[in-house]
Image (cartoon, rainbow, N blue to C red):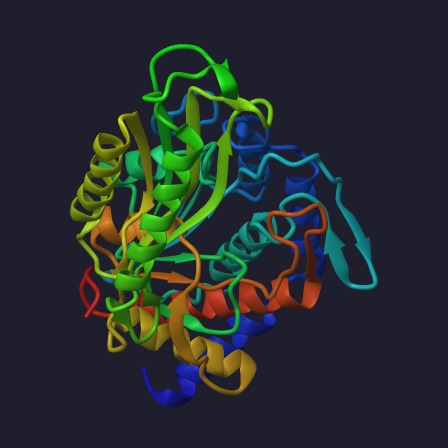
Amino acid sequence: MDNASEGDRLEKTRSAVNRERLVETAISLISVPSPTRSAGAVADCLAEVLANDGFEVQRPEADWPEAPAVVVRLETGRPGRTLQFDGHLDTVHLPYVPPRLEDGILYGSGASDMKGGIAAAVEALRVLRETEALAGGGVLLTAHDHHEGPWGDRRQVRALVAEGIVGDAVMLPEYLADRLPLAGRGMAIFEVSLSREGDPVHEVLRAPETPDLPAAGAELVCRLRNMNRSLARTSDPWSGCDTVFVGLIESGEIYNQAPVGCTVRGTRRWVTPGRTAAVEAGFRALVDELAAESGTSATVDFQVQGDAFRVSREDAIVNAFQTAYASVSGEELPVGGKPFVDDGNTYAALAGIPALTHGPDAKGAHTLSEAVAVDELVRVARVYAMTAAAYCGGAGHCPE
C-alpha cells in the first residue's frame, strides 16, 4: 500500500469515531457498580452492548465464574498480527458514585479507572469494523474482573493467557497519557505479622524477657528503610529504581499495654524483569533475621501484583502506536516509565508479548472524584483504532 492510500485509510479511521455512541457506552458501564470480585453485572452489561452492536461475544469463566470475562474478536481472515485491547471492569472498594456528564466532563465510579478507557476501546473496535480499516490480522477485545489489589489477584488475566486468549501485542487504556511507558517496575504488597506467645499485659506487670512487639516492628521499619537506601542503586532509566515502602504499622490496644502482635504493611517494587522469586526471598530473609533477633514469630504475606517489564523501542507495536498518535496529536508521544502496575505487567511476564499502557488524561483514580474529559475518550478511541490499522496488517503473526 502506498503512503497516500495508507494516509487516507488512517484519516478515515480517525474521523469515524462517534462521540455520542462512545459516551453512551461509558455511561452504561459506569451505571453498574462493580467493586473487585463483584463485576459480574457490568460484564453482562458490556456483553449486551457488544452483542447489540452485532459482535459475537464469548464469556469464558477465566477462573472466576462469578463474573465471566468478555471476549470479542474482529478478524479479517487475512495474514497479519492480532492486537489485543484489554481492560478491567472492576473498581476499587469505595462508595459508588453514579455517572453524570457536565460541560464535557464525565464523572462517576470507573470514569477514569477504567470504564471510560474500555468504552474508548469498544468504540475503536466498532470503527475498525465499520471502516474495514484492517488490511490483515485482527483485533481481540478482552474485559474482566480481579484487577484492583489487594481485593483482586489478577486471576482472570492469568487464566485468559493460559487459555490462549491473547494477542501478539496488548494495549491497556489505563489513565496514563503523558508518556508511552516502555518499562515498568514489578510490585508486591506485603504484610508482615510479628507475634509473641502469651496474652496482652499491663506494661508494669510484664516479665523482663517478654518480647517487645512495637520495638520489633519499629526495628523492622528501620531495616526496611536501610534496605530502601541500598535498593536505590538498582535502577532503570525509564522506570526508576528498586524500592521498599512502609505505609502502615499497627500494634497494641492502649498506650500502657504490652501487646502480642505488630503488623507492618507496604510495597516492594523492582525494575529488573524475571526477579520476582529473588525479590521475595530477599525480603523474607530480612524478616526472618529480625524475628530471630527479637524473639518473635513472623509470618509474611507477599502478594505479587506484577513483574517488571521492558518493551523495545523498535517493536512493531511501538512504531504503529507512534504513527497513530502523531496522526491524532501532531507529534509522537515521549517515551518513559510506567509509574504503577497494571495488567500489562502480567501479559508481558506470562504471555511474553509487548504491553503498552495508554489511556485518557483522566483524574481522580482511586478516589470519589473520578473524572475524564469526553474529548480525551474520543482521542483514545482514535489512537487505538489507528494503531490497530497500522499494526495488524503487518506480515506474519508475531511482532517484528
